[in-house]
Structure formats: structure tokens, C-alpha cells
Image (cartoon, rainbow, N blue to C red; front, top):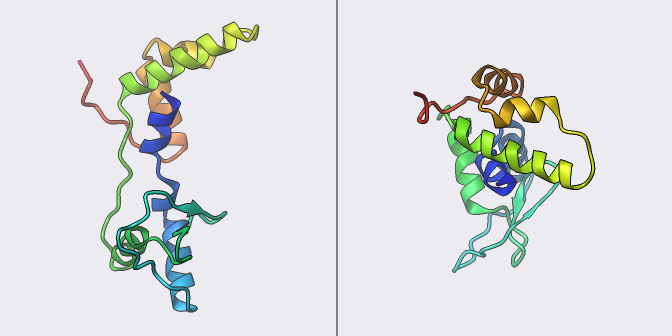
Length: 134
């Protein structure tokens, strides 16, 4: 479950990462032109993705950086409240099994407390998808 949430949040699509890609290309870094494209990439501390075969910047991230530079909105996909609640239930269960006390925050999230979920999402600049509302 945590992996699903991590996949929804893509740090390699954030402005700082895309700016780092543009900066790297302007200063001479190559963009990957491997065929076929590698299935795995390496991420650096700036969340720039690199091809492990040729050492170039991953082409998909480069294309997103160009779109970002042109003003195309690259909105992050929003997690659904049900997905957040399921993740919180699983994490709470892991805490209890490890002998840790239950977390009040995880209890609220696991119960689907939409106000708490929205507050956390807002704090981190994320949207909450309402596909599971009502």
C-alpha cells in the first residue's frame, strides 16, 4: 500500500527536479537515446532520473521538463481518500504488531476522516481526489 502512495507522488515531476533537468541539459548533460529504453533509472539527490546504461538524463523526464518550461501544467495525481485510509490501517497494524502504541493520526486517517486527510494533503501541497466521495 505504501508503495502505491509513493507511486502517486512523483518527486521527479516536481518543479525543482524539472528545473534541475533543464539546468543539467543547458550545461551539457546528454539526454538518453537508448533503444529500447531501460526499465530502471537512477535518481540523484535532485530527483533527476539518469539512464543506468548510457548515463544520460531519462528522456521522459526531459520531455516533462521542456513542457514545464513552456508552461504546461504537470499536476500530480491525487490519492483517493480510500487509498489513504487503507494505507493508514496497514501502517497502524504494523505499529501495533511491533509493540508500539497506536497513532491518533493514523486512527483518524484509517477511519476515513476526510477533514484530517484534507488538512494533511493541503499541508504538503497535494490535492485529494474525490472519486470515492459519497
